[in-house]
Image: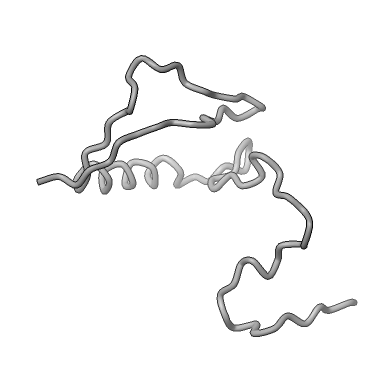
Length: 89
């Protein structure tokens, strides 16, 4: 086996795995996975996130009439969603 020795292996540095000169692929990071192996806790995590955000912040769309810029390649993803976020009083 070939082992690659990285500098400071105990330090958190996700950039160490990037290859110089390469670009990340679009939709390469899907935090909950998809298909048959989708995370079973995905819905509860999203509910908790929404509850946390809406409890502390007011979140509104910048333009309510703007069309959504979505892309569907097996999974539907919103490419851009402009929002205004301000702390609640």
